Image (cartoon, rainbow, N blue to C red):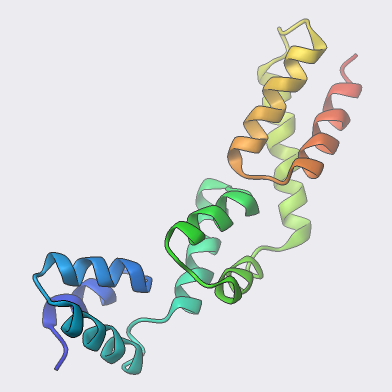
Length: 151
């Protein structure tokens, strides 16, 4: 039988298996009963890693404008399978992804207009975009695109 506390925990917000497992241990369940509860949650479709990965990627992209690298890293931290990670990343539109990258690069370039040294400016923009989780080749192209104009 499913624990009402874990059902509430998983229905309140989409959860991955590792979060549910940790919560069950916090609630005092033993190893055997934890696995049984996880199995029951999956059968009842309360716990679904693909749905979690899609929602997580979509949310972090829309709300925090994280790049794919950062989303992948965070999903791996939560022990999500590579298949589910790929499904999650499919929620991000490629055209919109590049538009947001350009917008962020343009915004950061405008913030750094007082910076005289072009190399320092490029490094700061690159670090900002890389920290957001965008791929290095896309970041390099965006940095050059926005700093070449400003010479």
